[in-house]
Image (cartoon, rainbow, N blue to C red; front, side, top):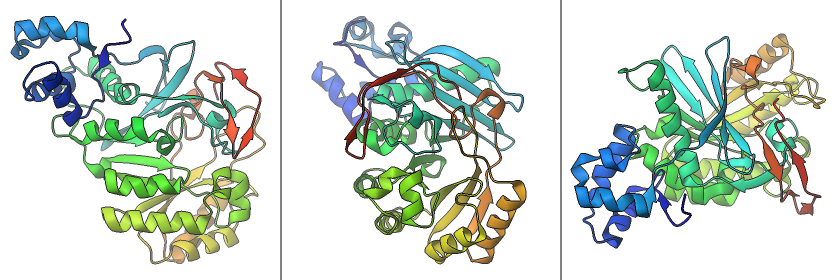
Length: 370
């Protein structure tokens, strides 16, 4: 495969039009191509019969349509499916499909590993290798649709929602993520509602402000603590962007996008799960366009954390709701195949681990499934 060829997966419509005009073709060819790629799931230029024979002969020398390759596939007892996808050099990322009665959610990755070092996350323990390209990001959705349609030929797409909650910090890969989202939302792409695409971030404030100008999607924020001292330990990026600064960016985003912010809160036994934590969290969010998603902690090898007891989670939920904050508890899915929230690991060669300015010795961790 030639490195000079452009992978057309994940290329936004305006850039695709520029590609065609740049090779002497009309801009409307972009519309035709997008209908084939996303509407029909076609990757073979020769089958795109309305492009014209001469153009179909030229395109394979200039471009390709290539999704990531599947390395492994697992299916949970509850119907959740997990795929490990090759990212070259013996590395892999993971994506997860979660079926529910009225929706199907695809959880996708944005990086090979993650550099933010959240203490309760399996991905963080593997370190960071590189950002995914737009083709590798959008290619996960393209591939998942193909796989699921093989299971149910002729049916509608099983995927109704896409969440950037897999491996990596999406806003640390802004260049790769935003173009892929634009194709998800495009009428010639996957036609997803902006409310059905959710980007989850640990709190990169400048990028949140940039996102509200560039892209309209639902925003989820990994909060996990009502105070800076504890959040510094759980989510170290808080030392750079503390809670007050982060929340201000969230309210700006909500005002511009007219969408509430979802705050993710992992329930850690004896760490952040007491009634007082809930009262202080309610004080931060009361009266704001916010809802809280309580996430039972999913264990992985080497962690010292434990999940809060069910009655403790219930009490936390009650305190939040009594305090005027809408809260819900996420049901754990796919934990028997290590596909639950916080468990994705893949295969990562850690090349450039930089944690809050501290350069750490590169390490290699491979096939650490958690």
